[in-house]
Length: 156
Image (tube, rainbow, N blue to C red; front, side, top):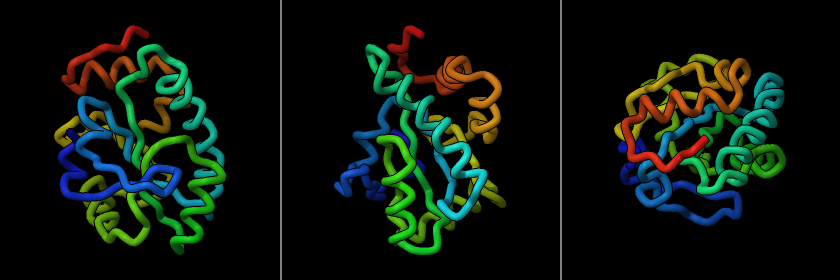
């Protein structure tokens, strides 16, 4: 399980609370720092949606990958609108959870969008997830999976 979210509660797109221990177990996790007011974020989010859909929703078995959205929006309403309108069917840290500030410090986030790919223990595989997806598409997932040192069921 991704230790970075131990003891936290995440949300799915339906607004239901999700236990990160269950949702993130044995997966490569992309921590996606983003905001609806940010044009580069609005440009990259649809690309990330396609990447996620191909890997997780259209693969059999689904790839061992999950995204957790960390909002830099100005309010809960702004976050919810951006999350629902543009994001894939992944998870989010509630806007009201101040843990987002700790995460931004831990992963040295100075600007959005930023996609940090982490191992189960929270160690960084790459902080250039956005660039790698743009440059290499689905091929970058294999290198993340190899670096993650988790049990693999991915065939792609």
